[in-house]
Length: 171
Image (tube, rainbow, N blue to C red; front, side):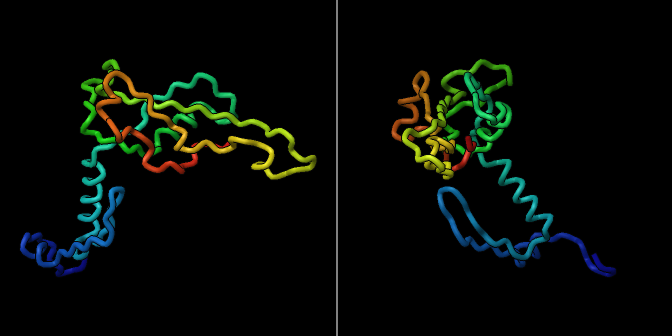
């Protein structure tokens, strides 16, 4: 701020200087230019958009047999970061954190991954892709396991990772 600068806020002035131009719009993202506003206002709008867009994420991970070098906690954290393509309007929010899971408030995914040495590998081979199968665990390996009436609820658009090519782990 500069001496003599007026910092009063006026809605008419704000509207006359504001310019919003949508550059790209898709089902997954929007890119737009917000011109004529202070950075603090742009940041406030960004924070509201992030807070108000309903999302569904992996919250609880149960591990039965992890023999990889990746720790269970790290694997669970990486799974929680995978964006899921689920219509959140088809689920109910839990009223309390300790509320029992039901088919109305919980979605279950399964993940089975196995890394095995290939047969008949030439002696001296060093390329891991020619020695091993299943070295990469991708988000596409998450499989929706419908519970209760979820098969009918989600119909032909079952929950899935928004991007099937996210690398979850290398084994």
